[in-house]
Amino acid sequence: MVRQRKHPKLSSEAKRVRAKMDSLPADEQMDFYKANRAAFQELEEHEMRAFDRKLLLDVANLHDAGWHRFFRRWLPSLNEKSVYGLRDSLRAIWEKKPSVEEVNSVLARWLVWNTKGYSPEYFVSPWTPDIRTGRLLPNPRDLPVRLVMAVLEHFPRLARCANPECVVPYFIAKRKSQRFCEQGECTRYAQNQYALKWWREKHQSQTAAPERSKRGSRKAR
Image 1 (tube, rainbow, N blue to C red):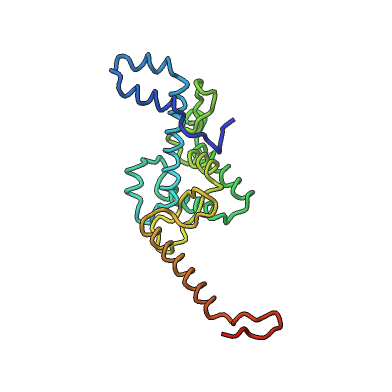
Image 2: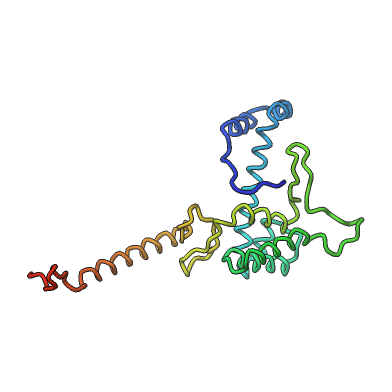
């Protein structure tokens, strides 16, 4: 079974072995890895999730003129048209437009995206068995499958920035009530909106009708 949500933070033991590995000479690193295999497995999974989280955000925020930059960063096996098709479907999922059944159907198609049209001798599985963890891991070159994993993990917190001028509006919220991403311009925009709301509410309270007494007459000034 593939686990999603919620993944614990990196343990202190995993952080320790990562720091220790960096300080060891090359001829000692393999023995150290074998002696601390569980901690290194945790590190690898943590890094994989961080990598796929970044991929998820980059696909959702892919600009119409941003293909070359995206290609240089990710070297996708899919062509430009296919990646933009994935982007458009991902954005619809991000904005919660399809029903739950429709989202599941889209993700199911992504899982077999790269298996279509291949004869058995050229078939490349979207999954890679990992005997160390006892899990099936997504093929690193299979972009649709990696997106499925990332969507399943982050779906409840996929949000679109409420700043209409945000250039990368698709983000992963840290809390359910978060309406703005944390880009500098968007933070300032949010502060201005909150200040404007406060001023309007204060102005309305000052111009409201005077409070009436219990007998229904207006209070004397």
